[in-house]
Amino acid sequence: MQTNWWLHLVRRCSSLLIALCFVLPLSQCDSVVEEDGKAVTKEYSFVGAGFTNGALTDIGKGQVVNGLAGVAISALVFFLPLSTWHMSDMKQAVLLVAAAPCAGFFVYAWTLGSAGQTLFGGFLLIACWVLLVLSACVTMGMRAVRWRKQRLHSV
Image (cartoon, rainbow, N blue to C red; front, top):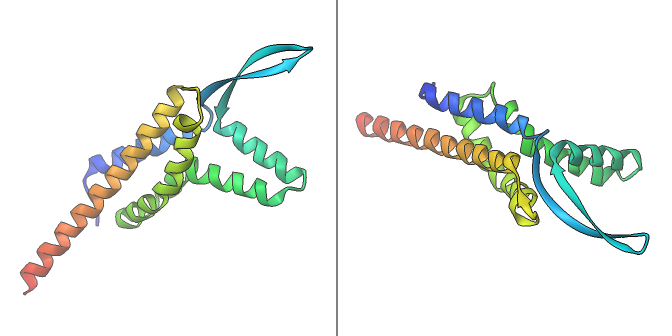
C-alpha cells in the first residue's frame, strides 16, 4: 500500500543526505596538548568516515569486538535509511522508528553532547534523522486511521 508521494520524497532525500553526512565534518572541538613543554591548542573535527576508519583499524589491530561495534554503529547511523528503500512503507516506518533511539544517541553524542562546536554536517544529520522519524510516524498514523476506518465499516 503506497502512501503519499511527498513522504517518499522526504524519506529518499533524507536518506541520501544522511549518507552524504558520512563524509562531512559533524563537529569540532579544541584540545590542549603538551608539545615540547608548551601547551598547544589543536582543533579536531569528527567525521563519520574517520570514525569508521578508526573502527577498521581496531579490527586490524586485533580488537575485533570494538572494531565491529564501531562499524555497526556507523552503518546504523549513516546507511540504515538507504538500506530500507526496497521495503514497504510500513516496514520501513517501523524499522526507522525502532532504530531512532539508538541512532539518536550517537548522533547527539557526536554533534551536540561532547562537541565544542556543531558544524553544518551535524545540523544536517540531526535534521534529516528528525524528518525520517516524523515521516515514519505520519506513515504509521495514516495506516492506523485507514485500519480504524476499515474496522468501523466492516461492523
